[in-house]
Every structure is written in C-alpha cells, then in structure tokens.
Image (cartoon, rainbow, N blue to C red):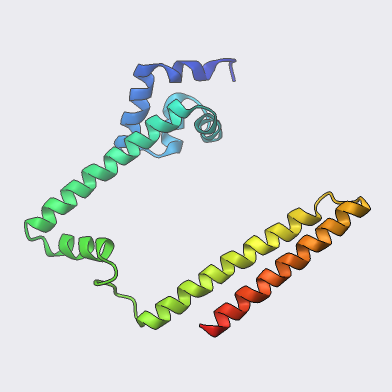
Length: 162
C-alpha cells in the first residue's frame, strides 16, 4: 500500500462519494473494491479516520430513512403487508407473533441478563488472574475473586427468587 493513500479519501469530494456508495446500498466489500483497497484496509481506515466512518454511517442512515419513509407511505396508503411489517417492528409489545406468554418472555429476558452477568464475572476473574504473579497481587486477586463469587451468589439467588 502506498504511503498516504488514505489521504485522498479524506478529501470532501471523496467522502461524498463514499457516502453516496453506502446510500446506494453498496457493501463495504464493494466500496473497498471501488476504492482499490481490501475490505480489511477499509475496516482499519474506518477505525482510524472518523471522517471515513462518518461518511459511511451517514450514507447508511440516509438509505434506512429513505426506505422507512417509503414503507411508512405504503402503510398509510393501505398496503396491508407494509402495515403489518410496520406494526410488528414498531409496536412489538402489542403486535408480536411470539408464542411466549408475557411471563415466559420475562423469564427469557432474565436468563439473558444472568448470562451477561456470568460473562462479566468470568471476564473479571480472568482479568484479575492475568499477570498477577507477585504474592501481594495474588492475594489481591483472591480477594477480588471472593468478592465476585459473593456477587455471583447474590445474583443467582435473585434469579431463583423471581
């Protein structure tokens, strides 16, 4: 890759081009091909340069708003399919095809929250143990793990009580 190749894509006319490509529905792979770079390079540039990331986000959002506007117009004009789609996606608590009862949905949400908590606990344990080879650090890690265990026990008790 030539040094500074990204700089031409930071110019305003090229940012508009990126935005337009995304608004027209091109994938990142297609956009990278148009730019003459790999999709991996585009992903790195999106992380590194807010201008590129913003141009692609604005293009993507513009496309979504345009489709949403058209769908809404079709729903308002009596297109039954558009009406159903709109209501299922924008009024989920009322127009839900789920076969789960409200209580079952609450339980499913609680299970997801517990899984997230378990993941946070596991990550905290791993982080606490990572690189702690000195005796003082090891003792501190053990204390942290004990504290995490107490939190885990309390969270499990709360879920069972529900």
